[in-house]
Length: 169
Image (cartoon, rainbow, N blue to C red; front, side, top):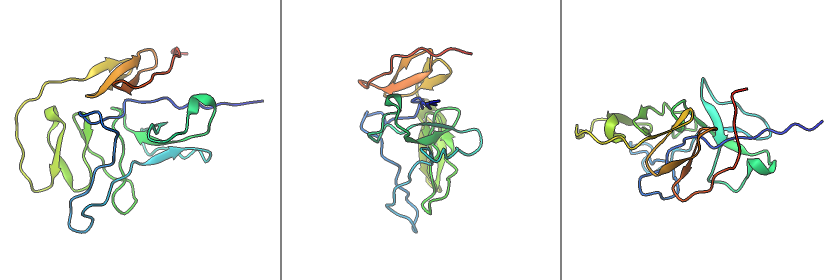
């Protein structure tokens, strides 16, 4: 008997300039310049995500779940925002801020603009237009398009998309 597990690409965020995603850099005194990595999941060990988070394919690696590979993934919340680890390797709070996730030492100062700033800093209260696009059960953010509505899969602009049909069975 053969069992296949397929991870789907979720609505994970990308930057507005459509460059490849890199983890945010923390800006507090103790960890200045260190990258925050996403919380990982899946793989051969089947590591679960915390709480109600979902495990989606990590598009930054060369592993391809549709080809049958047992790939590791990253955890995203119900909005498709990545859960981030704190600089000490523990799971970070990853507060959702519009289409962004704030890192350790940051707070959401303007959700309409997806603007996170270091704690103690001020920010603008301008209102930004919503560029999100509904896609099945997900919402695609800036720099993404809905490539498969039946599965709720968002992909980076110009990125590839799976040709599959998802049903509510």
